Amino acid sequence: MAHLFDSSALKTPLPTVVGELGELFQDAGYELSLVGGPVRDLFLGRVSPDLDFTTNARPDDIIGVIRRWCDTYWEIGRAFGTIGMRKAGFQIEITTYRADAYDPDSRKPAVAFGDKLEDDLFRRDFTMNAMALRLPSMELVDPFGGVKDLHAGLVRTPGAPSTSFSDDPLRMMRAARFASQLEVDVAPEVFEAMKDMAGRITIISAERVRDELMKLINGKAPWTGIDLLVESGLAEHVLPEVSALKLEIDEHHRHKDVYQHSLTVLRQACSHETDADGAVPGPDFVLRFAALMHDVGKPATRRFEPNGSVSFLHHDAVGSKLTAKRMKALRFDNDTIKAVSRLVELHMRFYGYGDAGWTDSAVRRYVNDAGPLLQRLHRLTRSDVTTRNRRKAERLAFAYDDLEARITALAEQEELAAIRPDLDGQQIMALLGIRPGPVVGRAYRFLLEERMEKGPATEAEAADMLRSWWASQPENPENSAAAPDGGDGTAGAGTAPSAEGSGDASARGGAKMESDGNPS
Image 1 (cartoon, helix red, strand yellow):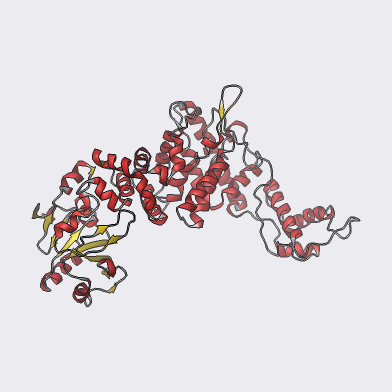
Image 2 (cartoon, rainbow, N blue to C red; image 1 turned 90 degrees about the horizontal axis):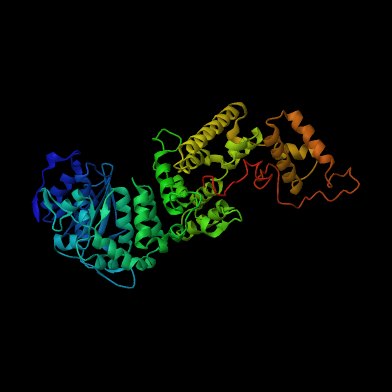
């Protein structure tokens, strides 16, 4: 089906580079069409900086047409018929019509070039992406009803879904991603094919799965996309820890299971993101993924107590490890893994504050442990309140408001965001007359503990505290049981060893209360 496209109906006009390219290829005797996502986006009132075109010209011919027109071009995808280029701020890819055949045991197609636009469109993933705009005539080619499906909010495939997903199993992940990004539904036959073929996703590289998952999580409605992954069975291969939550009834949230609670926390975390100038600009993958994964440690830690309650002791620590393991398997970078798993580990830290309150020392520890993740932790903690008990929700919100106010007040007094001991490694060695080694690290940790407990001290006060501590250490030559000064140790001058693990649970910010009756 083809008809002239009424460009006057667009909310955003076509970029001038589109018309220019169409004229260039027509003058050279070749067909050219804007295709795929950019055409779909025209109906959604948006223009992407990435433009995709398809043509009957072969790669050498494409280069001949665009060489003098574009700002720069590259041939990385040449073997697949794709020439990339940049022009006027747009990144452009032009690909020769394709008519590939796929090996059923891999994702590697036997590349074959085609001669017809309609054949090229048939091999695309979904009908909404199988539309083309012929240039420069502005003729819309929509042989599979993509416009109709887009307006109906349906994800359908040009041909049989089973064939499409067999050709490229990642398309199943893409269906879930579009459910998140565009807030659309998958057609019943597409969903059935996803369930039947979910296991095929295992032939796709972890990196490609990761990229689709990130796009899904950063979409408008990630809870919808995740639910589709779980209900179709894809999550059993991609995020099995999330699928496992569906089997776990959370006695702590009697009106919903742990899985539904986690989707609600994800939804609420999205609502707590800020605009570009705020503390946590959305979409924020770290916050969102931590919200989804925050309770994945519950199935492994569930315990029925003698009084009939259910507890999930240490599910935060277990969940943090499970999250890191899953993210490593999906080939996430180390910084992202550390940030997400740390938020999962810290998500219970706040609870208990409203019951007993914290000392200034505990507040300092909370801030210090969160470090640069503090603003995300604020939002994750607030998102984790999904109780229907209005009074309880208001009490928790009031308690967290109070904690944030105390953090702000202390920060103004003490530069809380960068808590360090009052003496550095060089000063410690000079004062005690010792060389780099383990003793320096121990002294540093002692001063950090004092800083946490008592707040800032002057240099003279810190020196007095250090001398008092040193007087009781076995390495001090003045002690009768003196030992070597540990000069071969690993902690050197200026080193800032971590204070994690020091102090009991309440000193680190309140006991972790995880039995029935508290948010999780």
